[in-house]
Image 1 (tube, rainbow, N blue to C red):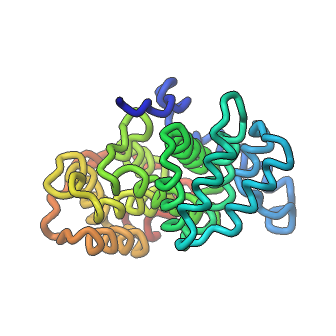
Image 2: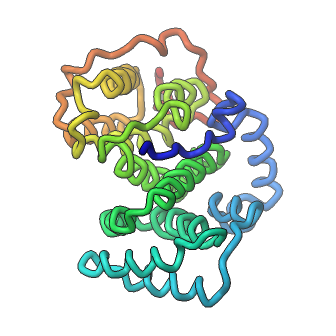
Image 3: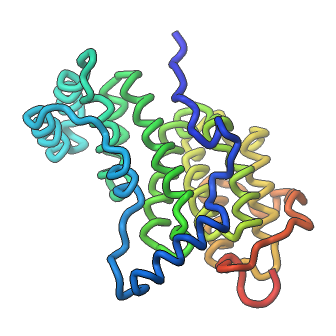
Amino acid sequence: GAVPQPPLPAHARSGSSLLPSSAEIAAAQAEFSGEGGFGGKPEVNPLVEAERRNPVPAPAEDLRDKISFELNNLTPENTQLRAATIRNLIDRPGSPALAWFAHMLVVKRVAAESNFHPTYHGLVLAMALKTFEQEVVRQTLDSILVLLKSARIRTSWSERSLLKNLGAWLGALTLGRNKPLLQRHIDLKVLITDAYTKGFLIAVIPFVTKVLDATKTSSVFKVPNPWVVAILSLLGEVYHMPALKLNLKFEIEVLCKAISVDLPDIKPTHVLDGMHVDRTGNFDFTSRGG
């Protein structure tokens, strides 16, 4: 039968922007200044902050310890064995273990440990548990939305690194396995457009290119697939903008090389022409032009 889709994220239900508003950014900057800037409190991971605000129900400590032991001793060679053990531990009606483990895997491991993505991906597949895979995708989307809403994402390299890692992971779970990334869960074209007008390309371009990087293993989501072409065309428009920061150009070049697309062959869109761009705290362009 059909796999049930993850529930709609809050932004899709409300139609609101994925990125912080000017008021949210100003409030965060005021709080930062109040803490004494860089001399104040150390930077806090937004995913940890979100977890503190909305704690994830956890199973009993002995069960948590058993699951953690299996995960800590996971290797590419023993994935099948560990997956079977973890499945037996979490696949229990009414237990919070499944959602708790999916959350822990995404937030504590996947977001921070991109080198281990193939091993973690192998674990998700070896578990062969649709409800678990669905929960992992949901937790991934939720974590991405938390990071995109962070007012510090433009200034924090570590937050952008978490976002890139989750982008690569989301792409591998979906596009890389010929599964669509539904617009109602996250619309990449709308996200890029929003990021351009608000000055968040610095965070969004590396994220989107990491998601699309997974199409290199897809037999469906590659040129001339219309969905892929539409996003590449929008990235092409961004690429040719005057004074776009070189590191953002580089991200797009790296993507094209990875998926075997020649940049000159991409026909850029013109959807961003004439859109108003907020220049306050904007790191997307060099000081001249843009």
